[in-house]
Amino acid sequence: MHPALMPVLWGALNGLPPRQREIVLLRDVEGLSSEEACDVLDIRPGNQRILLHRGRAGLREILASEMKKA
Image 1 (tube, rainbow, N blue to C red):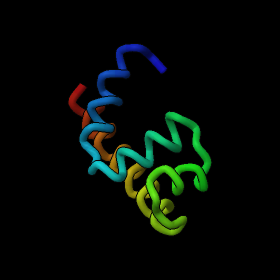
Image 2: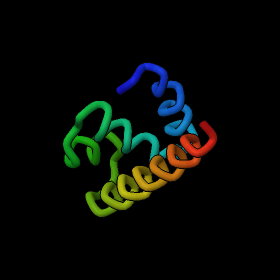
Image 3: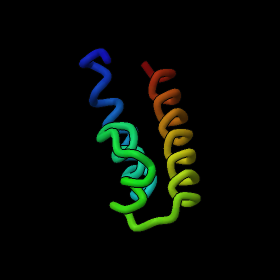
Image 4: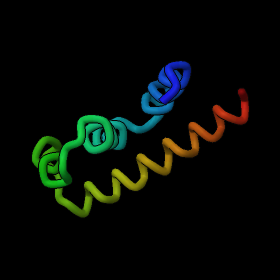
């Protein structure tokens, strides 16, 4: 990833609701498995999938909006 995009990515992550941000960070940044992420957050697998899907979708929306501004 281009270094200039890192502040945009972190800003987008901070724009997510806390639980969505946590699951995206655990799964996509830290590389935890779904089972490990469920254990860390004390949630069920179904909840983890929903949070991850919504978090990734939200991140895409925020990043797309930011890219249009640039």
